[in-house]
Length: 93
Length: 226
Image 1 (cartoon, chains in turn brown, green):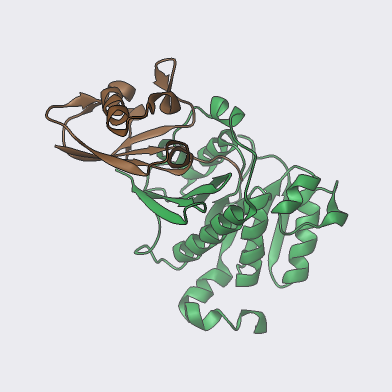
Image 2 (spheres, rainbow over the protein chains, first blue to last red):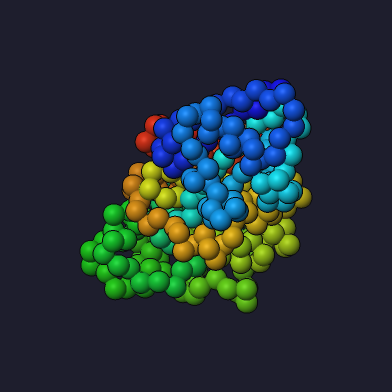
């Protein structure tokens, strides 16, 4: 199954990539997906997204528009083709 | 009225009548809020309430378009009210010089514009209006980037559940560096969405999705929400 990963805003700037497609043969957790993305990009994106084992403050991870904070966070299982959006919201006004 | 001659017919009589009869709140009169207010009074919104408690500092002048160098040190609400009345004296404008807290009595308006500068304040505002059925046009900005979404009770989740962060930790990390054009861009989009909502143009309204704007790469991306 194909997982489309989209990166936005400062992540796109810092990582130098707007997104990637990852081919999975079996379900993986969100954490594993990010590890696989790092391998495919040949650049470790984990330090940009995760701190002390938790999703970094200021990062939102969505699976088909559903925030994993409302599911099992980094342990949320990805079981079917989907779009994963990694989005750092902007707080200023 | 002559001031509305370039957009009244474009929007149509029916939509313009809704705009003229509408009442709105603008929460925060910084970068986003000053531009939102500027456009709302020119468009002819009937009644506008706005809230802020701060005074004008020199760094505000790079983007807070209702203020000038003579306003430094003045309450934002006073300077904004003076500037807005000069632009269009026909609008009913009510300035509230206060911080929005859980005890604030937000008027029963048709729409609220979120022009605040922290998620702590945004969640307080959300708690005040969403249960009362008042919709919200949210925008947030930082450096070269911004996001926008419209929250409509009964059609979308509340703001807190739409853009969920740990607000206390998040607010400590907000990058205060700001490229002024992203502020005016996002504020213009807020007003555009507000006009669509007031005109009942739900087909073109940005709800149940987040629009992410990147002025570095000139990209406008939409995140569809589930």
